[in-house]
Image 1 (cartoon, rainbow, N blue to C red):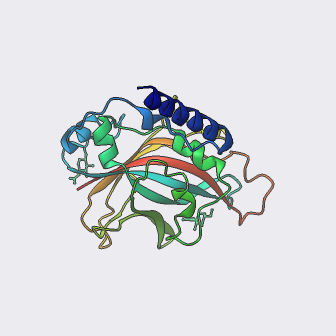
Image 2: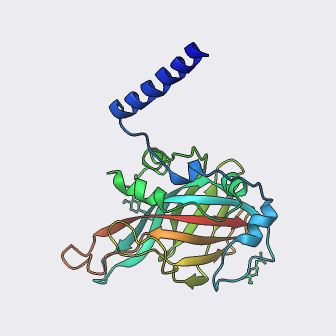
Length: 244
Ligand SMILES: *[C@@H]1O[C@H](CO)[C@@H](O)[C@H](O)[C@H]1NC(C)=O
Ligand SMILES: *[C@@H]1O[C@H](CO)[C@@H](O)[C@H](O)[C@H]1NC(C)=O
């Protein structure tokens, strides 16, 4: 018994001392959660909060993504106006099923805010977003905007299944008061209901909800002292619930 105990003690003390020497590993509170209860995708769908957005009862849940990226605003009119976004979509469907809940925490945005990166011009460069991916979610796809006439359509591209949703913003509801405002404190962007815009671009998806938003809102005074052609970018995370 004695050698085993002292070995155990050595192991624990070396773990403790290495903990003091090594930089603290990234910690994410959910990863220590003790309770897991697998729920069906159907159950996940039933549990999706929609606030006053249209009901999801006529469609079937395909994926839930954690979007990590930036919301962009133009200064052309003198006040910030939304012109688009770019985000990496991580697949959190299995994670939410295992946890039996509908969200991951604000910690992802907080971790992302600590990085000095901005979204890259290169859509396929996920380096920054991946650097905060403590729970090893796989990359599901991308969110970006594509010019359509004078406007821009929000696009959601799912890599593996080659599905794509070209969407239009139909339902808008403010994020709940408890939402994380972001480090700069300008607030969480609205929750949205975005069905397909009916264009030929859409394949295999009918609609997406943007919920559990954190950050992404602009400084209302952000355009005050910058040239009119400035694009302001604000970091955000949100969950995208995809249906077909
Ligand atoms: C489902 O119903 C909502 C309204 O509740 C509607 O806006 C949406 O287009 C419908 N989706 C499909 C795929 O029929
Ligand atoms: C948003 O801004 C980022 C830079 O922060 C840029 O890489 C991206 O192309 C912009 N996207 C849109 C749709 O404006």
